[in-house]
Amino acid sequence: MDTSRRRFLSTAGSAAAATILIPDVVAGEIAMAAKKRGRYRDGRFPSGVLSGDPEPNAVTLLTTIDDVSGAGTVKLEVARDKDFRKVVARREIPTSPLKGFSVKARVTGLKPYEDYYYR
Image 1 (cartoon, rainbow, N blue to C red):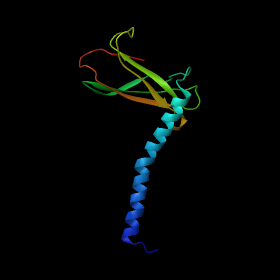
Image 2 (cartoon, helix red, strand yellow):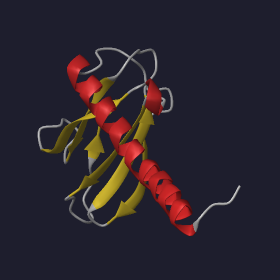
Image 3 (cartoon, one colour):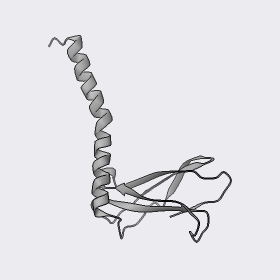
Image 4 (cartoon, one colour):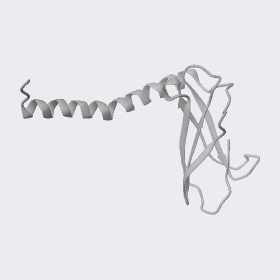
């Protein structure tokens, strides 16, 4: 098979665009389905919640939820006190079977050398 340079570049460009754009399309579909269903009312977090990639003003929180089905959202709250009266971040994070029911959030705007609580 004789492939011209132009045809090769065109095919390679299309493949690269698909590789870049498809995850965004899937993420958008997951978010729409999760928003439509709303927050999970049940489920468990068998691995707890992992915090990682700390910086002076940010942290990444990760977990998985099980005993649920379909797309939905998980509520995240980060507070400066144990009673969650001083909440500094609150959001609904979409997940679905396509993501293995994994949940990941980057929380920014934190103050260095402060204690924070999350749920």
